[in-house]
Structure formats: structure tokens, C-alpha cells
Amino acid sequence: MNDKLKYIVTSIFLSSLFAVLYTGCKQDSIEINALPFQENEGDNWGLISTSGKIEIPSGSFTRQPSAVVNGMFSLPDEKGFYQLYELKHPTHPTSARRFAQVGHFFEDVTLAQEFPDSPILVIDRKGQSINNIGISLHYDIILAHNFAEGRALFCTRKGKYGYMDTQGNILIPPIYDQAYDFHEGLALTGNTNDKGETSYQLIDLSGNVRIQIQDTPALLDSQPACGLIKYNNCQSGQCCYLSTTGKEGLFLPDSIREAFRFRHNAAIIHTDHGAGLIDREGKLLIAPTYEEGFIVGNDRVCLRTGNEWQLADFEGNSLGEAKKSYERISTFYPSGLAIVRSGTQCRWMNRQGKPADNRTYHCIAEDPSALQLVPQVFVRKNTKTENEENNSANRPEKKGTVSASSSITASASSSTMASSSEKSSPGNDPSAGKPHTTCIISSDEWKNIGKQNPFYAEARKILSGKLAETDAENRQVILNYVEHLRTSYTTKDIDFLTQLFSEEALIIVGKVIRSTPRTDGKYLPQHQVEYNIKSKRTYLERLKVLFKQNKEINLLFSDFKIMRHPTQEGLYGVTLRQKYSSDLYSDDGYLFLLWDFRDEATPLIHVRTWQPRMLDDRTPLPEDEIFNIRNFNLQ
Image 1 (spheres, rainbow, N blue to C red):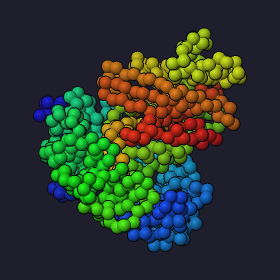
Image 2 (cartoon, rainbow, N blue to C red):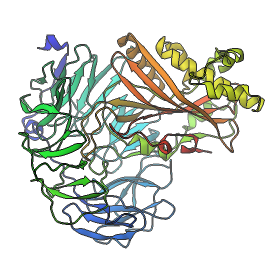
Image 3 (tube, helix red, strand yellow):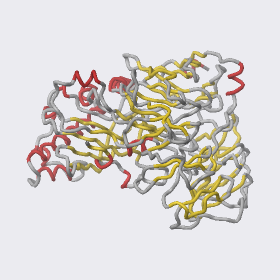
Image 4 (cartoon, rainbow, N blue to C red):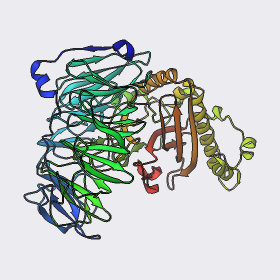
């Protein structure tokens, strides 16, 4: 069977205690006490417990509070800064201190930032600082995730990942090129060698390697669940699971086209005939005759036919009122209740599929980050170390700096998983010579492009004669670079991509994967996204591997727009829609490039972001949520 899969796994057997703890699905110890709600449309906010009891009446808060996790919640003031509250004292904050961003209290402490891009803090329930992790004698930490199982993932400016404990102490040093949050006592980490080959391993809470996974063409899930970690073999297309206890894994038949992460010892699978459910041995529990499905609790699954969802048990028996279906069904909370929505109203439902009471509400706001379905991400300003400032003393002086704002953080938190093709944020390398030398399309050629060309509108604007000469030149440089960027993937021009990235660029990598359905009632079959920060070297080496693995890579651009900053001369934002396809992977989303022409000799691309076009299978990304130049703090 190993020969058939061509997947070589060297396992280190865990202790018997570890096997007992993690063979099954570990239950969450985090308690979500209450959620924000509105009783009627247009009401102010209140808090309702996950058992259906109204803790704070609707209309009490003019702004939406956070979910209440382990007795704590946060509430924004009129300026958008947050204060901490306890559910038992909801009218008085625990301190006068305010934060631009503050995490849920999964532990007795959490992460916070006083201002956008400011150093990341570890704070207690009173809002007092325990540690400032943005200031370190050894590492320049620019990104961190909120705690998961007592460990916070962090990233240095060099793109290396490590973990800290709840006191902010570095417990596992930043030695990984890729790393993900802990789950069931394990975290997936990876390192890339000089050939661009990435080897993965599962580490325990102390950083010890438990399972070593040799580099192979496979798409690997970022999170172990129920003692298994899922992967897709890129060569055969087969869906498989590795055992985290060193035992034999699970290999699914070729008829199963896709399989998802286990939950409550069951997993959703897809065949050519539809969606179904399997157990840990791969035995079919529910025949694949439904359009979609996701697991919402122990022995409970939601199944979709048409546009409506029904609750069922793991044998496929429908629960609740006969022929009753819903537009949305949430996960079941520890209280034994889930939230269901029909039309404009929602209510609480019990495990038998019946209403918990007679009350309905306009809105009960769930929070995927409170359920730890997505990480809470904190980003600080990408400052230079003292040595690097000295080394760059002879470079041309810039009039200002550009840094990613907290709006990127919010988008980067939208989902979590770790396996697929990668795309990153580019920056132009000053040492590569003047970028104007790559203007491969002349003004005369731009005059002849057709209306179907994605650059038509912007090219006509440049040639209209209504723009200032410098502005027109800058825009033509952008057009040519973006066209060369597109063809560089098709021709696998790694040299051009190498010169496009500055050594100091903040590289934000976005990945679209087929992931486990979300448990907030919205099934996301193709548009789960994970964002990460990588170094230039790590990204380019990985890109070399992807070029080798794919015979064909194609990019299609549309909806191309250039926006000049209204007050800061020389800064431009570029937004476009990109359809990416290769032998192994495809996606559809929006790119944003932040250009800086303030040094005329060496224009720079500071940031590249990516967002999926669809939030789920029915909801396009709202136009006002597509990144533009206003989403960045420009100083």
C-alpha cells in the first residue's frame, strides 16, 4: 500500500499516554458563554448565553460586543478602541486601558495591541501587560496568533516561525519556514532546503518531533484531528490520512474525490454522486447522495439538498419536524443547542432538531475565531533592526514608510489550513537595476490594444494626455510590470520574479484549499483561505518546486484599476481580478499591489495581498471589502 501511494512516512511512536489522549477527538475546553444578539431589526446589541438565556438585554450596547469566552468579552468605544469586560460585571470595564485589537481569553491571558501595528502584548484579565513580545533581544517579532493549547505561534521579520508560552517566553525558537497552530497536542511545521524541497514534521508542545514526514508531492492539512492528519497525493489524486500515533493510516478508494478533516470520529467525503459520511475506518455511514454536508456535533451532521439544510444523525436519519429545513445551521455548543436561521429570523434548536423555546431573534452573531475555527492574528509594524539601519545608511533617503494596516490582519484571519499552491506579495529589488528597463510594451503598442484587454481602460487613460507626465510614466511602468508578472508564471521566469521582490518586503502568502466545512452554517467547499508571512528566499524556493510540479500555469487578469494616493505623491494602489490555474490547483480572487515611486530610480512594490472572489458557494466578496490603497497606513 505504501508503494501504491509513493508516500514515505517515518514515524516515531508516541508514549502510551499520548496515544490514549489523542487517538480520538479531543474535546474543546474553551467555554463560549454568550454571543452578541439583536432581538429585532435595528436594535442595539445585547448578549445571549449559548443555553438561550438573555444575559444582557437587546439594546444595551450601541456597538457590537465580542463573543464571551471564559467569562470575558470586549466592547468597542466610539473611536473603535476596545475595553475588557467580565460577563458578571458587564457595565464596568476591568480597567480604563483601551486597545486597537484584543484577543479572546482562551487562557488566563491573551494578546493585544494598543494601536494598529504597535508591539504585541500579552495581557491579563485586568488589561495589565505581562510581556511585550514585540520587543526582544533576539528576535524581531512582527506577527503572532492568539493562544491555542497554551502556545502562541509567532513569526519574525525574517519569515521564521516559533512558539511562545502564556507568559510571552520563547518556548520553541523560530526555526521553521512554515508552522501552524497546535491542536490535539501537535503542530505541523516545515522547513525548506536550498533546493526548494519542504519537509514537514509534527511537533509536540515542547518542540519535540513526533512524526517526521518526508518531502513529497502531496497537499497536507495543517491540523491533526481525531488522531489523523489528512493529505491528498498529488500524483495519484488519492485522499489519505496519516495516523499521529505511528499506526497505519487510512487510505480511501479512488471513488472518493475529496475528503475533509475528521470531527467526532467522522468525516465528510465527496464522490461523483454527492456528499456522504465515513467513520475512522473508512466505512460509509451515510451514502453520498447529498449536495453538501458538514459535521455540527457528536453524532450530528447537516446535509444539504438544494438550498436547504437538514439535521441528521450519523446514520442519516432526519431529525426534527418533518420536512423542516433551514438556510443555516450552526455547530452545537456544549449546552446542547445550535442556532438555526429561516428567512429573517433565527432561534435555538436542540439536538433532536426541535426549537429550544418559542423565542426568535433578528440576529445571533457567531464568531469563528471564538470557536478557534480561524486564528486571531496580530501584526506589528515591520521595523528594521539597528544593524540593518546601519547597513542601509547609504541608500537613498525615503520620504516615508509604508506598512500593512490592521485591515490586513482582519482579512488574514478568515480561515485556516495548510496545503496547496502558494502566491505571495512582491517587491521590486533595487539592486536589480532600473525597473523601467522591463517596459516591454511601447506606447504605440498600448494604443492598439482592444477593448477586451484587461488593461484597456487604464491604457486609454494614460494615452489621453490628461495626466501629468510623471503620473503617466508611472502608470505605464505599472502596466508593463503587471503584464510581465502574468507571463512570468506561464513561462516560469523565476529570474524576473526574483528581481521583483525586495529583500525587505513583507510577503503575505495566501492559499485557497478545499477544507473542512465551517461550522457556522456556511459551507465553504472551495474558498477556505490561509494567510502566512514568508521570507523572500522561502517563497521563491517553494515557487521553483511548484514550477517543476506543474507543466502548465496560466493567469487571466480582469477588472484592472490603478489608484493614485490622494495626498501622498508617488504612491499607487493596483487592484485586479486574477484567475489562476495549474495542473494541481486553481483559484479566483483579487490582487492588490502597493507601488512606491518616490525613489524614481527604483520603484518598489511593498505589499501584495490576495482575497478570494467568493466568500462561500453563493456569496461574492462585497466590493467595499476588496483591498485598495485606503486599507494601508501610509506614514
